[in-house]
Image 1 (cartoon, one colour):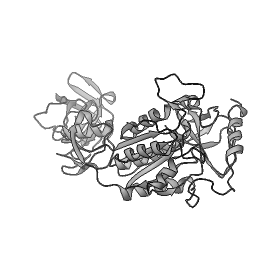
Image 2: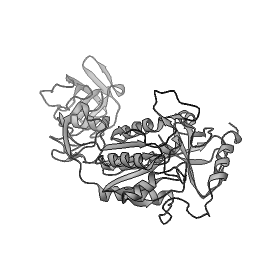
Image 3: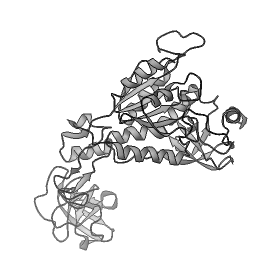
Image 4: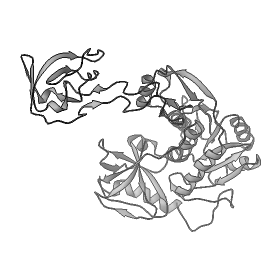
Amino acid sequence: MALGSFACPIRSEINTRFQPKLPNTRYNRNVAILEFPTARKLVIDTFLAHRSTPEIELIPLIDASGRVLAQSATADRDYQPFDRSVRDGFAIRSIDLPGELRVVGEVQAGRVFAGDVGPGQAVEIMTGAPVPAGADQIVMVEHAEFDAGIMRTTRPPCPGEFINYKGCESKSGTEVLSAGIRLNYSSIAVLATIGQENVPVFRKPKVAILATGDEIVPVGSQPEPHQIRDSNSYSIAAQVLRAGGIPHILPVAKDNLAQTRALIEQALDYDLVLLSGGVSAGKYDFVEPVLAALGAEFFFDGVLIQPGKPLVFGRVRDKLYFGLPGNPASTMVTFELFARPAIELLAGQSHSHLPIVEAKLTVPFRHRTGLTRFLPAVLSSARANVTPVAWQGSGDVVAQARANCFLIADPNRESWQAADYIQVLLQ
């Protein structure tokens, strides 16, 4: 892909919208516009300070994947619960190696060898089986010859080789999972291993989603040429679900003060309020005036990012809210950077991290400095290379759907060459 195929639309939007030396023309002239790291830290610190401990639910283990563990889990016995062979082979005394050993029996997983391994003896053993008493080494079957009851090997003595000893993973009563982690398939396996059929998890936060704008019509309707279907409410709902919340889509607020206020007041019944659109500096952008009339605090009134610069964050009537910009890509980006950690923390997670990796650019890239940019890109399956996706600005949802990550352009660096490393935010 040539540079111009993705860079020109970006430069066009930057030249017409980004004027870093002009004063803030937003509704709240005295509220800060922050750099990205400062804004994200403020969001996380605010939610850590503001949140109360969520209610605890006891749910079946089969339903616990993706939920946040409410109480630490401890081992009900030693793991491994016995000295366990991790290879198919022969259980022997290391002092007898190398040499010829008489095979006196076998043991498979789920069974126990009744006797001891004595001098010059070996027991054929399968992966997962208990190591017989007297043995202190496993000789892999690939390293032995077995014929007429005799096992021969040239392997040197190596006490403990291929044996997982009792308690090597965890001791009885020790913590194996910490409260506040989001459960995945491996932690589900741990809970099953320790016999936890039912799991205490935190209640999912309920998130109000309120899109605004006269131009927005329902998904199932036929829009006029000057109208658009409500994609933001559904993309936000999908992101809320992935972050561990329960989305509640409210009716679209039309561009008038009374309806916008009534729906925002309705949204305040939920744990978190996500507003989409109406936060820019236009004549009919009513979200910020309504919030101000409701006595809202504005923690910041913009972030030096693209897309998503007009992001608003604050508190009203003891509920925290985000005013997400209305363009679809802006909504998606600002959710991932700011609303996602908010929901994760409200859901009881102990922390929230951005999934950032580095990859090599497949083409040259440049941008105008001053903003941290999160641009649609395709990361190779091996996460080695990244290619920017051509897009037509923050309203281009089709380009975003073609991407599987966001390329992160440093605000203080203007250009990268092909094969330069650049940061990538995973989706």
